[in-house]
Length: 323
Image (cartoon, rainbow, N blue to C red):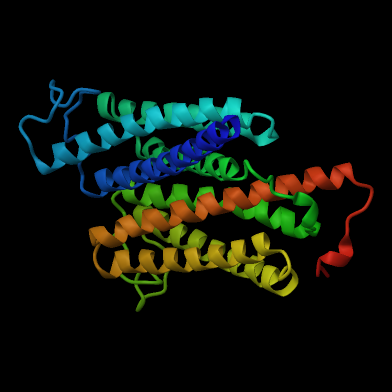
């Protein structure tokens, strides 16, 4: 009976992790929806009330979108707190658990504060662009915490992985750089510079000159940053496919990352071609969220490999096809 009860608790915690991760994705996409529909002030300059009331009145599209985003954020906040506390006590023996629990809660609160501050006091474009990045970190920490819950029965064996030093630094570097790409993309949107360049890949394909104003500089700066991360992930994927076929988490992890960055690039181009069709703008936010979460998980794997390497005098290099 005791074993059955423990198994039920494990299953419940896994479901909580899945639901919490999905709720955080809804919050991310909801935030993008608020921004792209111009609904940030749909409830006026009041928070948490909407125009002085619990429910939107008068009810408009903008007020409903903003109210639903706040409502989903409230539900997600409750779930994140529950997941963080339960994971702390259930799998706190894993060294990453407590760190991820703290990070998920801190960045959730920071995200809520930035959203509230933007409504009540107003914020600059530079600060508002940071809002999506903070939300992304909160989502990634919840995702990794959920993946660790699913490892409850059998901890991922880092001893089976052997990574060359350059692969480790590429993983860490491209993850940090991806946050810069995210920030520049959010800055483009908050500066209303999404369609300042109506061609792709150049601002004006018939006139390959330097940007003429700060809006074009921000737009083309983001495109350049996005091109670099595409090339970087393509190179890492090439290394993974060539040298890590027998290490599935590395092999498939980078293949999926390359697929996501391709989808991100295509959706970004379609935002321009469709003149900011809402579906493509939301897909653009969805793909970068998935990509950032995956990159963070690959960093978790790298951290475990490094920990293993420090605890052993030698690594089983024969098992890894590393050159």
